[in-house]
Image 1 (cartoon, rainbow, N blue to C red):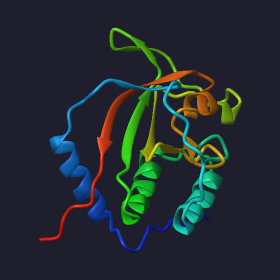
Image 2: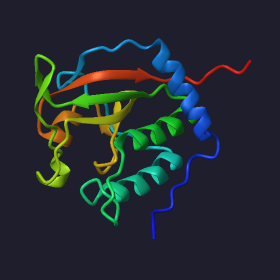
Image 3: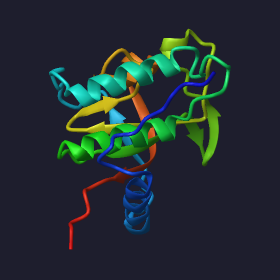
Length: 172
């Protein structure tokens, strides 16, 4: 018995792949940081679509980022799911590829999420950011960007290996 997985009916997998492909063709790898000193953003209400996705996604990762069968969930796919929902709501989300600390390009420290009490550590993690909020289903709700590093990993700053912005393609 697997987990039934549905996507937003307004965005097909091909739509998501096409948007991602266009963005990847035009993006440049950047090193930047999500830093604690950014201004705080108040948590506000989320749409029904985001709420329904969040409930499902949070449940899917609550077992140390694995489903009930022990199969690992994919943070990149989950981030793409929320990107599609937010695009449908007219937002301009970004995928962020986070990494642990590194020296001369070599990963020296994994990201260890607080939600899993040290049982899980990653060399990288992919999340979605939009309008000052970070959408990461391992947390109970979307988190303001400024507090995300502390709330998710207990650190003041996270390194972003690559940021991929999204916009809805114009219809011709």
